[in-house]
Length: 92
Image 1 (tube, rainbow, N blue to C red):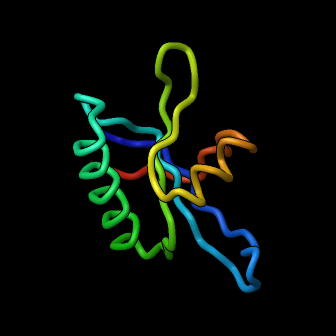
Image 2 (image 1 turned 180 degrees about the horizontal axis):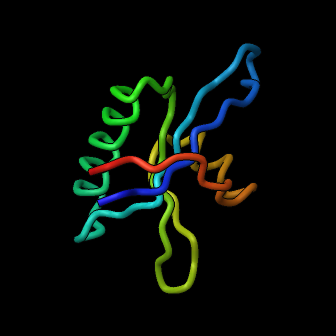
């Protein structure tokens, strides 16, 4: 199964750069525990594919609204800016 993802680099508030990945996915159950497991698996896959990932998050549609799950700072950033364009796909 292919999962859409966005891999981006932004300037960090403290200076320097931060690389992050957003995955178009949600666990089957939608529970925090299962979402956390899925996010960790996808983050590891992205890193094994050669991508730098400092923070990551899931982005999914729930009841007609986009929801985010993942690193708190990244989720806060995405909640103000929305889902970026997908830049890659990853096989799961």
